[in-house]
Length: 303
Image (tube, rainbow, N blue to C red; front, side, top):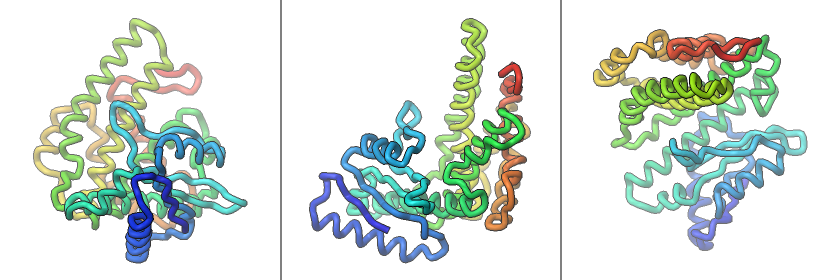
């Protein structure tokens, strides 16, 4: 594994200290399989150098950079000279906080730990499915709706397991995404309702389905973070969260099923045999869309 620092924010002494900190962290994470990790990259320009790397290995281009947030870290999976590999891109601002006070430093350690857990999970899935990009596996599922819902299911699983496995490094003052969910649960409902109203005027089914996927994917991702923290730290959801969920019936059949389902997947983790392990998660995605009035069909799009 090689640590590549191109950011101009680091002089030689700082770069040496960063490499030492990364090496020490990895040495302590014996519970993770990081054999596929090829590079940890701290770029000067996160977006530009990430896209260049994605182009070099013919990967899907892009990263989170929108109204919902900006990526501070990203794990890439690919083949290099026929071997399965992973690389982590880290924004230099994250790495710089390794030299700040205890609280900021712990936040940075936790984020890096989380990304290393993604490397572990990506390798585990490669070991089972034989592909760097799981969408290549989902392509062979029975229909187009399944291809889409399996991709969402994998996103939920990926964020859940990376959060659960990295929960031991959670900073003491971390809210475990409670505040994010308190604002996101009602917002998702409003955003989806507005998308449906817009569709009735414009008649653009592709735009509607894209907006529904974006909103619900973000919600499910944050719910996965939250459940991962709860399971990893062995704590129950706070009452304010349970009370909020009860006020939003569109989460019926989703909230109460997701936690035990993810735990059951964790219990069988490492012994998966086929993509069918994602069946129940994909069904939850469909339930959520249905609760919002969206019913994807293979022939006729969305109704």
